[in-house]
Length: 371
View (tube, rainbow, N blue to C red):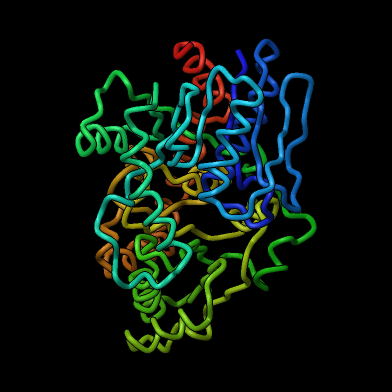
């Protein structure tokens, strides 16, 4: 088989969830499949994180505007290389393409009402692009992959896609996320002392940043330890607006915002944290949940969407819309040492169910079934 994989953004330095998923899938396929030939289509950028091998060819398509890259450059390249199948990995695909398509539809959040508080031009344009493209490509896709049972049921119900055209393949996590000693003090690049709460929220309303900060304010009022909160990649102006709007000035001196945290440092950030706050309103999977669990760091996560499915029956679940409930669980972890150690052991056991090798093996079987 000659298989194309769309991986447009994996060479950019500041990668995000979908970029890491396809990058790890490619790396695993390079290891396990020597029979088929792959063409991986990327946009040129500074982080050459994967290289060509005998049967995996990295093809750079230089086209700066994403819709043009996907709708024009990608199908032309797929035709040029005579592909048997094209796997588009990030929710959208070319509308005009004669090659059999496989689509990874991570979620259908773009079909849900847009939160008017989201003022990010990048996120809003992406939302609009997906709303325009996805309905036009679904009937052309031989198989549609998604990443959790929750999201599969959501897609089948709302888009009326026949179940036999769906495939659920769990994501994995990178093997360097594990309990390990931070001999070089990597975490100190971002925060002076260990034992902090860690939060990966951003300006997207679904990440629930505002309620989480209100919960942190309540925690500070009741805690004797008063642990600091490390927040990755959040603008100071956005934080200031939340503080003023909610009257939570008491959090200002306890929050550390170092900017973007590179992936290779994240194991040490999770490992030196007291707990990880993954309090999103909605996630289709939630790789950071696995990463923290793999490092043995307890996670306070939401009782909504896919998070109970991925975290398991013994996960620390809270109502993400209730800041009081989030604060109470932060205090419970801090004050109940037996509870804390129990949840730590549960994390390390639960995470054994997931791996990128399993993901790639399932993906390879799907390619074979399509052709």
